[in-house]
Amino acid sequence: MVDIIKYITRQSHKPLILIPVILMILSLLYLGAFGLNEGVDLKGGTMVTVELKQSMTESQITDLVQSNLGVSDVKTSLSGNTATITISGNVDQANFDQKFSNQFNILSFRSVGALLSQAAMDQIVYALLFAFIFMAITVFFVFRDLVPSAAIVLSALCNISIAVGSMSLFGIPLSVASVGALLMLIGYGVDTDILLTTRLLKRHAGDLDDRAEGACRTGITLTFAALASMVVLFVVVKVFIPSAQVLEDISAVLIMGLLSDLLSTWLMNLGILKWHMERGGHN
Image (tube, rainbow, N blue to C red; front, top):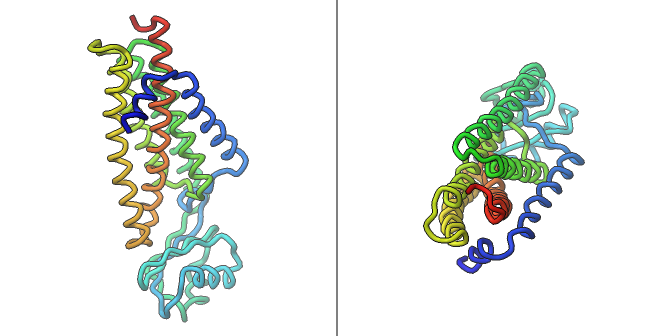
């Protein structure tokens, strides 16, 4: 770990900047080509929680619902004798109960219409947009230097782009829960970026490489601690609470985002700041 940190902070920083930039471009290209699945909260659909009257697997439940309702987009999460079934499109509760009265007891039945879905999507766009705007204003007010401020915003944008591209790659739907995780990523990513920028620009003890190494040690330790907790949460939910799909999605998005934050902060942002200061910036 120490050798890696010294290499990152003391070797040529320009080639390292390209790594997160290339990953960001690839993520955006993949996202543009394959799109992003929307959760039932956003695209509309039906979520049913049922009690099984007979032992069935997740795939058996999914096949049964698909064949009886004539729909293709069905996801099932099973926990003990309770299953949560997510169906794309609106389904009539009376019709569902009639078709599956021999297999299920309905515990809850929730439909999300297209109007609510559009409103939710608009709120998500506004939330992410205002998060970036106020972040940029706050960072510029603190450092009063355009390059470090732009580097922090670019780093956060790179972080989110890679995380969203990973969501598309691994089939994690865009939902209210995953958007909350993305907003948390913005906050965490800015924290590590400000830690780095403050160490390099505001402190003067030691040379530039020493300050960069100290910031890198602290930041990577914090990120690995957060990453370990998210991995534990993901494993616990996956193994012991498979019905908690919201927690699984949040932890998965945060894991991918924390990994991308390591690259965007300690390769790209660090490289930009060192280049800026070596050229006489922020004197």
